Length: 347
Image 1 (cartoon, rainbow, N blue to C red):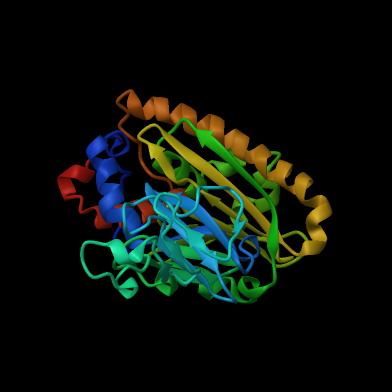
Image 2 (image 1 turned 45 degrees about the horizontal axis):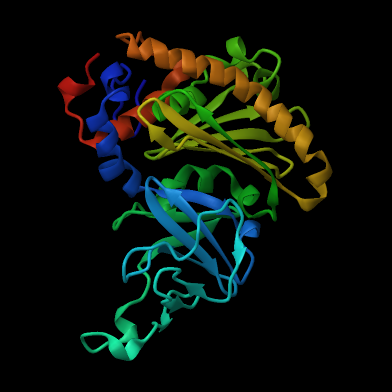
């Protein structure tokens, strides 16, 4: 049981799930290496801004024309946010700092500063743009990188680009979303969603019916991602991709798509974000679809919150199963990027 990242034959030790030092290293070494899906393309109309947070970093998205732009959401003068965080995009022709009135266009260029002639040194607007962040659009999602040297997005999504084909480029809008707080470390939640060993046992009337018999499972692994593909009753395959840092993309053969992610909150809590995308004609059935997805995610919530208690009690994880190879693939990549040594990986 190996993968491109050279996975060991055992799981990460429980210490990797409960260490404050490890959590700090995740922010410094792990999360900055990747791109983060932050919203859907249709959720950011032209002439709007959206303020959000990625791992403690205030981020501002703007759209002027067809191409979104991302910045650190802070005025270069004294660090105040130019736009208050909100779950919805806000219409704005300009970005005005509420502290001292510095005014920017949606491309991050300083247009004016209050009382410019009174600065103690010569003032040049061109020297004070907003600090940009790398920003891309792919699969109807806006992706932002918070690190200075992120992995190329095409490398992070290599398996998705190879396996999802035309499904990536089908037109979609956000149909429904849900955000829940889970009482577990993010790695436990992410591990669980990569764990194909539990589906038939823990989800017999929900997800198992969607994915079908275990004997029909098809797996694929790359350096940065993994895939479980299962035959769909009406034809084609149901594709479940596991991606670093803590993201999952699900594709149905009819063009529907789900994004499930588990961004960390603290050592013992993460957030579960669920976005459902599809053709606008599916809006009338979106709530029923969301409830269907939330049914199996509620089953998972009970499992991962129980596992959090088990890990905290001094668990030494048991042997990995063939159906946990996607989990091993991710843990090996995580350990490599975190710089864990061989002794630190021993149970």
